[in-house]
Image 1 (cartoon, rainbow, N blue to C red):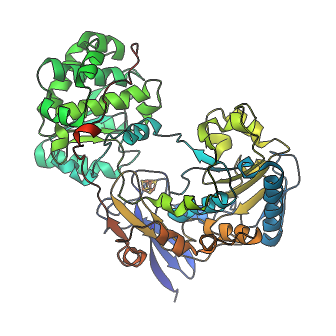
Image 2 (cartoon, rainbow, N blue to C red):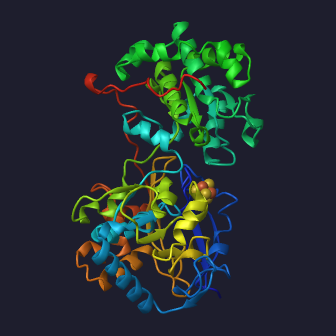
Image 3 (cartoon, rainbow, N blue to C red):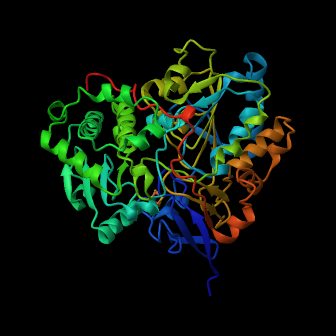
Length: 527
Ligand code: SF4
């Protein structure tokens, strides 16, 4: 009789849905993962990408032992070494770099291959303690996040979608990327008769399920949002009382959108002027209306103008006053897992290097002090970053010492000096937040690590110990690292007992008069 168990977990990927899963284990091996039906938002369904997650863990191509490069960078020639040899080499080379060039010659290169507190943030503890340069920036939804930093609210609880009366899906293919949102959007249609309009240059799977599809020209989103805002202002449809409570520059914004007549918007977007007007009127009249927006339109030349105009449109409409109304671009539980990185371990202020400029940084084209060592985890920069050719050239520098934590021999790992085998989500413990709903969730270890794979927390502890770093934070267990990221009123034990906790932030609070936000200023005159 096989010994079986079911272990609670969470999908680690950089996705707004952050699904809760159950790992089914038989005789020490995960035989399948499936969505946890009890989770209020993800409701028991994973996506096609992750349904077969165990095939990742048990892939014959998994890296299961530390490797040292023996051939040219990029040639993919490595020899197996012990963990002791790997850690000795890393400690020696990082130590040499610090002695000769200073800590800032080291740099983290990381993204959200895992959004977990331990897997994402633990290695930063080591680099902070070594005085490494900081890595900043975002290669995904930067315009929206930058706008949020100025005080704009960019999302709300998606379980509120059910209250919406009119829904615009703008540049987002919900059924393919974040399909759990569709249930709540469709529920608004069933309960309230909400009409759903899709704005997308492509006729997507989602567009096919909507009541109307408006195919605008790629990159013209900012113009349409400006034109809709202008209709609200010129036709007296704006909730000016609310808008004046939120923003200090309504007159300036009015001037900014004034040139965006329906005719000009129509010409820019490749649609009818009447569509611009009717869409704006229908949005304004809904009680409430909402816009679910994707990351894609933010990545156009007018991406910044788009998110600002869209936020302004939602504020002018006053829909934020009601549950189910407003802008749904990104939303987060009120827990900041970045605390797990322990920035207080930095001995002194260090420079910040922009991830999207990694190619220039590694090739010395940014004019700064050269980078001599990088630790890479949770990303494959040789492929995913802008100007990836320059990134690859930089990674091939003979005087650059590169350590990569990975599951597979990626294009980045092929250019590393040392490759360390990392555990997959089924083999380690972690806690997760998300950017698409309000649940913090647990990932319990389902099985023992395969081969010699180790969690990022364990790798951090080994290197720190070998380098003689004695701060207690550098020897915390993975559970302690996870717990350190949680607020006092959310003890790890509670999360372990329940699997997840909802932590909703306040809904678009009205700012104090002297803290009102700006709406204008982010629109190029020519779209
Ligand atoms: S929908 Fe997103 S969070 Fe859910 S399983 Fe797929 S990638 Fe993971």
